[in-house]
Image (cartoon, rainbow, N blue to C red; front, side):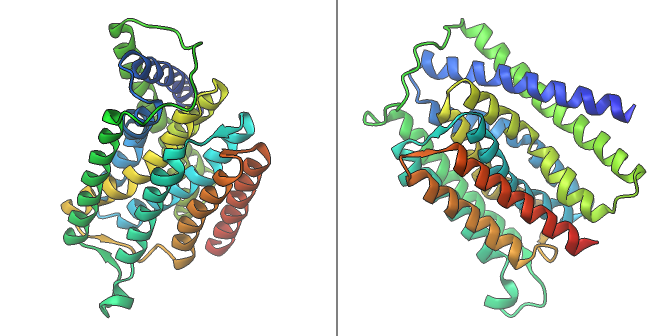
Length: 319
């Protein structure tokens, strides 16, 4: 049954990503909203739901290490592996808005999480904890991000860098169905994958730490991976890059912020190396984006290689 659910989960994720991308792109065209805005909001929030559900459930059951590890691991996975795999599929063009505003906002989110995880340094506390007050700060940043994102939609000088006339025109009900069923496929498929893969990992005798580092973080990021690769394959770079950037921002500002309001979250399991790589990966993505305003296949391969090295290093430290 675990093997069957694993296959069903992967199929649902890939199918859901395809339908969600089609629906989101058609919605952007129909209402003259830039693809980047759709990627930063509807797609990013929808594909971040597995991280939210996993982290929220972990907090409710007092498994804070799983909650924080899921967010930090997922964001590193998003920036290095997902952008890398998407760029290998098709080079990703990066808009001026992403270069000057969106990627810096994702960097700000990573820096904010780093600062909030330094209680022992800044306040002399005995442990590192994301408190309810920290959660309110993160949610305030999230509100600012949402205000900025929707202001883009009203901005007359925000035009899409890619005028893709090949995008089919769908009726509004078909668009809604694509988005709803696409999100459902992503969420249920991601859950099936994580649960079945975790069962198989335990059967194979893999430790809980490695399961959390690899399967939980990678599994909950499967929707982002599938969505960005499908979007890149269809030549829609705005959704491919916007999905990753938006998801990273949602994960830190909204997911961590909301979970911290429910219960303070221990950050003891997150190492300084993890946080430095979280920040460094965004910086590296920013640098690559400046080269001809695109992420080339070579740069995508470099991002993927860096993630593989990080994963191998983390697994060796835990064994």
